[in-house]
Image (cartoon, rainbow, N blue to C red; front, side):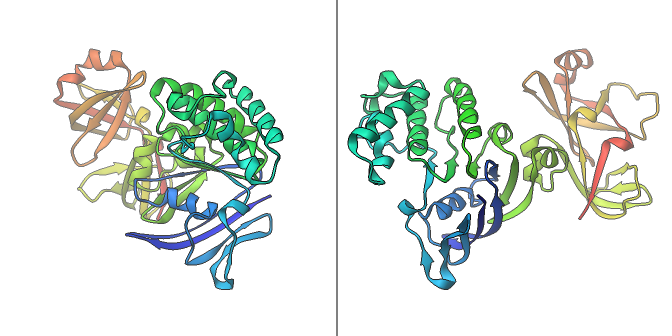
Length: 350
């Protein structure tokens, strides 16, 4: 059961024109900066926003096709939707919120509530089944929202930043639960994610939106190893440089140059992993083809590593250990010597 989506619409300043497909049991993560069109894509597939052109089709069933006047109502699409903020009905208990989709599909009240209670138990929420949303924590409310989406037996699962409104403590646990339940869902799954960790934790494939267009798509490994825009490079923490390769030398717009390996030539996107960059206080000996002096602009923690921003004609971010920061006195700034092997610079023609 494959979802095919060609979404063309204009909404305020957003001009959206994207196309993608998601297979059965596959999770596609939509990532991108604010205003790129991620949530609008989800809402269009769910039937909450009309298309001006294109088509939405699930396993051969056409939900939207403006050119033929086809538009299936949201409630008839069989999509389970989890919003950024849980959007539970404030006057209904957790149990009745969870049973709501089943009741809308014609299930008897007793059967719907029995199924809903089983879903709440599955999410560890049996004890709060009779509680109203205002009595639930953020994590509990989002679990109820997910239980409500799954209880109705959807053919398609759409999640719009489901962890964004949850505090950091609850997010870790909810991420694990969400991943397990998504893995057990047999239909196509689309996740809108602002946090790279959420996208990488859940997705089989990632599509990057910028200004209403998909600028890059691929597996997590492909996106991480070959980011094709500054946003993607920042997202995955990889350095990205645009320039021109001539005679084995990458020349950058700011005047910098790097020796590269391979036979590429012309306009390229170069990526350098932060951990492939070595820093020294004295000019190093050895074989690296690229050695130069650069100023430190800032140093910050990133998990168990430290990220060192380097200025100059070749702006890069290096990742080193806290011990290296202390040993080299990097926190005090100043200039350092930078070394990169030519083979550590990956090139993609553009």
